[in-house]
Image 1 (cartoon, helix red, strand yellow):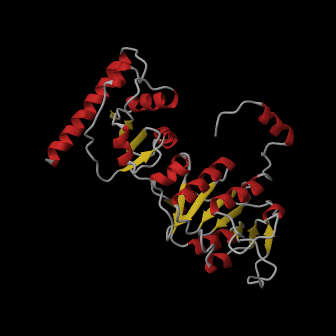
Image 2 (tube, rainbow, N blue to C red):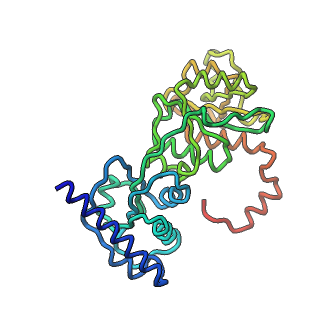
Image 3 (cartoon, helix red, strand yellow):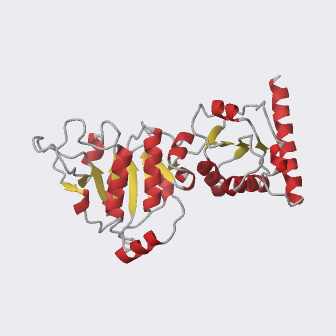
Length: 327
């Protein structure tokens, strides 16, 4: 029975691909009447693959071509596809990827009721690369290099939001601790709006050793802490400074810690300075820190706004006046 199901799935995939190829040769618009007739109720599950969901993650994954793609799943119920969905279909045709049209209820179940926007893909997983493959970057090459280092980020939506901010603001590389860190899952990709699909994410088993090695090479290791309270004793000899007063004049590793416990003692001891975000009012206990993804956006912007290529005031006004594509 399992063999029969596999044969049925493979045969259907070939029929679907051939169906779209004939439509393309006839010059028909992708997603027209041909698409409306390709309905599939009995999807055969595939093993050792994961289900990527959401329009941006799937589109960027196809563009980046770093994953193997088994099938593209487009929600049934509409006669035609336009814009980015039509581009998805054209790219799948060009790569001979089977395109199937399950109903929404089937996609909801497959995605465990995540917001899929009617677009899913069965793909091979992405894995972080060893940090040794990041390449050697000498501090003398560019004094304004910025790497983001993440220790023990466990929530996939936090991880994805951090990656989205890092990509948007121009972080050069992202390094994660392999231990106690969230893997590169489809939920992370969706939370990153697909940024995970185009970014190089590296990992290391020895985060402390990595930071010490980079410090010996001339990099500044800047950790992060919550806002210190006046009544708290100074528990570290490492200087604490507001992120707004931090001068970015040398290659820097910005290190963010776990959502609950922050940086481990070993990692914090490897930092040369600790950055913090100062609030504008007195805060009760429990509210003296920010969500890690929010803090990452604020910290990265405060540093990257010093970048020599960052838009000037006049350029920013021009950007605000010109119509922009949605982010």
